[in-house]
Image (cartoon, rainbow, N blue to C red):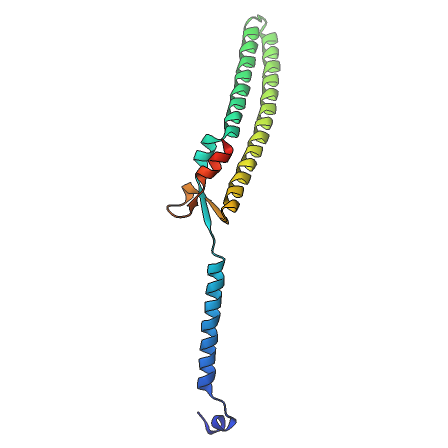
Length: 161
């Protein structure tokens, strides 16, 4: 310390000690705030939930019915086409049936996609509601983690059955 410093009354040792103390207090406060807001993680086995979902089962039945209807349309078209002797008429009839079947399939695809999206949203809302009810603020698919988290799969399944 120079003569000037001791004359001005500055005690650098005390300043350094206060800076270290402030850093320790700041770290402690940050730690307490972080621990107080710790993320509570929920895990859910989406494959099991989907397998148990009545909405997903209904969608599968609907889709199977749509595909069977398309198959029936194609079979009926083939039966009518095979009886036509004129090659040009056969080709024209085949193209007409194909256009009808494709239009029907496109309509079915849009309906199915819309229903699937609604079912997916409903499932996500159910998972979020179960997690919120249990005070969990992060939700992870169980297939994405090795260990940890609070498994809410059974609670979600109870709601989607």
